[in-house]
Length: 421
Image (cartoon, rainbow, N blue to C red; front, side):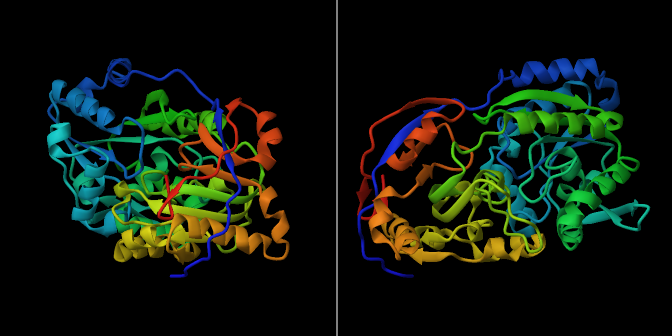
């Protein structure tokens, strides 16, 4: 840990923006209508149905899970929840149950059993010989329903990114399947993953996939049930909608980006790489924008359960964040992914104030006089881009950006014993 001599941080102005938005859906009503449209009651009657729920902070996921459980049960079926999250939760059943509990999904809250295992059954293989790992509890069930958000992936871009196919191939492949995919790097995710999912669809009785798309305010504005034979084209269509609705920072060139919170509940990479403009995957080209010279991350969310995957995307951090890291859990997740740079520890400073000043000192050590004109952006997290703070040097660009609403006068950052208020 380094102790930094404190100098002045340029004042920041509070900015309010309008993000890409849609009309939020009413979860229970929409699911009932979709259930009836696809006539799913007869497909689950008198059957044991596994419902796969992942580790991401999918909006309204407890409501989605409860509604699915109720629909299966009222249709005469026997529902149970399974964690569909690869190696997350430290790659242990107890750890994955803890992750679900942190998302509000427990036996008590959802009203049905939650069954966690890391055991998989190999259901076959792809034409290229890639094994089809599947959660043992799912393999032994009579049918499967999966629920996930469709969004832009943080590791790669292609016709299928984060969504139902990835949950089927990697989430329900548990650590065995996830590690196998990640052993091929981005190729394993972008190219092999869709083929594995398509092959699994020939071996699994997938009743339906529940796909949501969220707007810039992290609200589900699209919810569809996709049949097994429509899941591939349906997910491609919804991914286009997700791209349209994804929020971004208002400027492309930033000296210091301050991110208050890192977390697995925020993004699979702790911070959404599409927002911060950093991949840090060996052999992969970095995004063209935004261009962030120094990134400071201040804290880790409680819902991450100590998993600090993505901390290596930052350059500077705090002792407070470091103290919250569960290293075995983080190490397991990073090692499975194969993207080691994302797990490396940034420079650690005693306080928020010291870490922010370190970033400024680093950038302007050759020209300290230019420090007052630093281009600084502060965000709560990569999911919270409606209310941000920017330095005075960025105000003209921010006013001219899409979605600008209003801005206050620049004020010095408020610190209490070095911690940002």
